[in-house]
Amino acid sequence: MEFCTKLLEEIENFKNTGIPTARPNSMNYYGAVYVEMRFTEFFKQLREDYLSLFTSILYKDYSGEKIDKSDITVNLCLGSEFTGGSLYFKGILDKPETQ
Image (cartoon, rainbow, N blue to C red):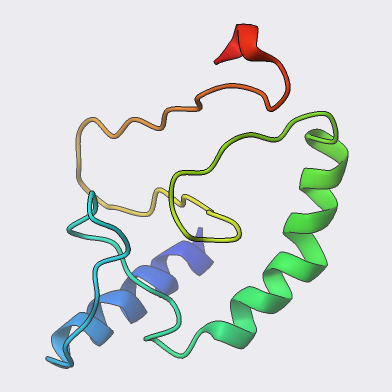
């Protein structure tokens, strides 16, 4: 939990600098692009050391269509106050009955 709190603080600090930032995608007004915050190496290590291991074990039979230009999308719910927020998975690749 401490990590999430510190990450939220860094995102707020970055937003308060006044540096112009890009929206993560056309549907997201409040997200952050980690490259702009100079978190590239941190998230690279997180992806390589942890996420790839978990996803290869937990989701070895699953993949699906992506709509954005990212190689991978990681959605982290870090807000302190909010309502709603849905994440929709279209289906499993090569299994049309799930799409």
